[in-house]
Image (tube, rainbow, N blue to C red; front, top):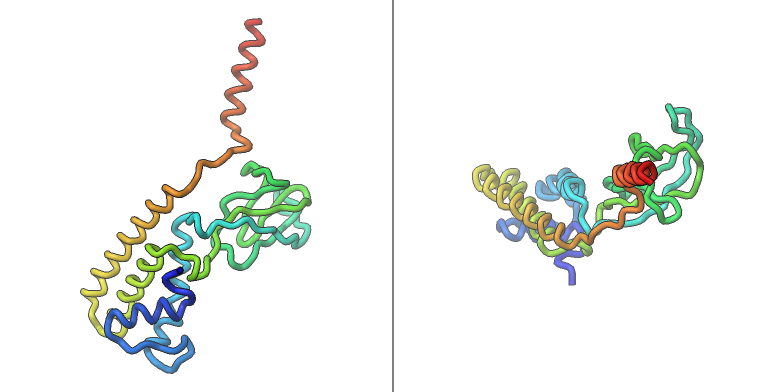
Length: 204
C-alpha cells in the first residue's frame, strides 16, 4: 500500500510530526492551510523536475496544434499538462534523433506531420510515490512548517538538510532500478561503423 494517497495526507503527516493541528483541506481558513496551499505543488514539482524517476515515466501521445514557420520546423505539437519534462520523442515506436525535432516552451516542433509520442516524466500522484520519496517530501514540509508556523529557522534548516539527503538517497535507489536503454539510433556509433566499412572496402 502507498504511504499516502493524496496531498492532504502528506501535509497532515508533516503537521502531526511537529505537533501542529491537522487541516481538513487546503481551502481551510488557517495559517497552516494557506502555507500548504502556497507551497505544496512548488515543492512537489521541484522533486519531479530534478530527476527522471522510473515510477513517473510515461509514454504519452502528442496533440497536433498547428502549422508553424520557425526555422526548419513546420508543425507544432503540445503535450499533456501532467508532463514535467520530456525524455525523448518517438514515431511508430522508434526514438527520434534530437535533430529531427525541437522543443520550444510547451511545444514539440517537427519538419513533417505525423503521429508522435513522448517518453516523459510526469507529476505522479501521491499514491504512486515510493516510500523514500514520500518520506523526503514529508520532511521537507516539516521544515517549511517549522519555519513558517513555529518560528524555528534553525530546526527548519536541519530538516531541510535531512530532506535533501533523503532525496539524494532516493535518486540513487531509483537509478539502480532503471534498466539499460535500447538505443535505436546512435549517430556516433553509426559514423564509426561507416568509416570502418569504408576502410575495409578500400583495402579490399
